[in-house]
Length: 266
Image (cartoon, rainbow, N blue to C red; front, side, top):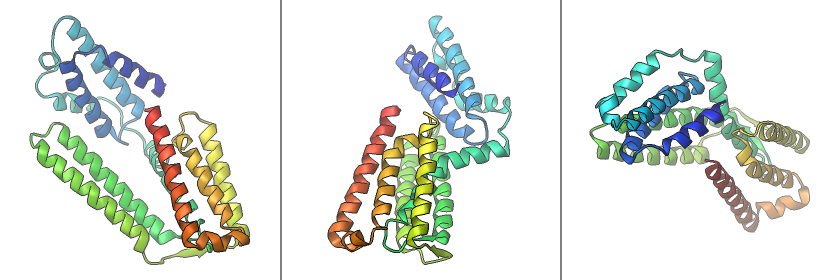
């Protein structure tokens, strides 16, 4: 249902004039960001489709979006959100897990790409919380900048926060001290890697719209590298400078290929 609503929205939007399209796309971005986890995504898309249909009808009568909806589209969007039912906590939790499960999956699997695998659960929890806060702040800044009169200032703040935030996360992942670290032997590592691979396969191929599906090539590559580190004859070479460079290179290639797949879908 969601896919059909978004596809219908995208198709109808092409019929808008350039001026009306700019006006509508600001409302679209604002509502999607404003809705967030507070409302069901389907409800937001249905509202957007109603606004688009009204705008197309007005356009057919040679009425511009500005004349039809007024000079304060933000107030219109907020008023429409008040009329719909907020999502339940279970739906919000489901949306949260859907959004961040791939991150957790890859973070845990990456810890097995070393000779002695160990999961730093303290780092995992800290980075997850920091990532959620960073993304929430960035989405808030983007939403506020849509109808802000200080567009240049808002953009500077947005770029600054995103750059500093990503640098901070990267440094945290590298230098975070050991806290609640759990190590695994080879057999346990192989079982855990296999479990995550099965889970990844299930969610990637059981649902064509799965968030994991585009990243499956990267998931498979990470699992294969993790398996390779469990082979005693390969451990010495993989820990060498050459092995490390090749491992990093393969991961970068896998990430690029998966990212291209995501962008192609969009």
